[in-house]
Image 1 (cartoon, rainbow, N blue to C red):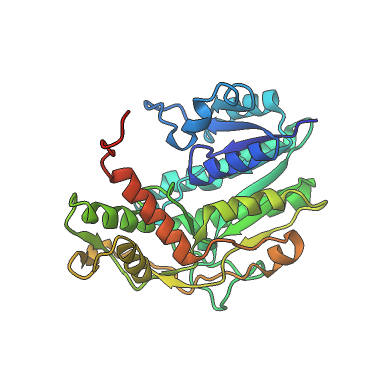
Image 2: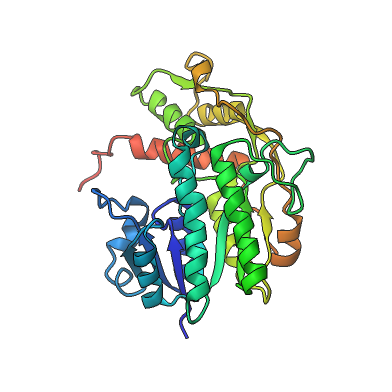
Length: 334
């Protein structure tokens, strides 16, 4: 029997990589998309334009996490075996500007989804994409599944609420519900307002003469950065055991924003120094510190570990930007 999955946030970075993985595993994939004025599904374009996949093995449904009735109707119709809950306002900096909508989508949206799953005739397995931001400024380093939550921004607070709720519903109602506490993971599909993508885009644009400088905030800030392709594999693995549990997904290595800058500019063979400027206005009001994860549990129980190094990640992202911005080769016959 063909397994089926439902993905919230399917059009995002993680959703698109997860869609590819699940289709490769023979799943029928359903995704939630918000009804907006734009029909752009750029990360899913190759599937959307393939009639042998879209409408056959991949289906998109209009619904929203703040509309319980529509969301319930879709899930009753689809009756998925697995749900991957990835949707939400995920930009930490923006969460200070939009705290209410961040909490509405990330915290309350997860609670609504849990309530719907609880009432379904056949409860699907749930993966909730939590975040290292729940740890905030931890006392211990690295962080694992037992590290106390201490979020320092609205996004982290909302994720902490959602993560705890998943645990409550697992224990109280017997749901197969897992939290994946995911440290930063990037790719060429990362949103343009995230710092890794911003840097890689700028390096390529400066190389091609389309931009002259890159303005950043705190370049000494450090993160545990991995590749999204590795992390969605962890999502799938988390739902395969007999019993649900929570897992940290991380590389266990800290790297700075400055390292991203140096690797990206080296990839395009430029000296970063004449081009990179710092603006104190871009510093965050409260910056998480020492966020580096220990994924020993995921490695032991799920046989998961990252396969792409930090340097490979930034090089891949920069080369993708360079290829995207380069003019077409008109020397070849069409």
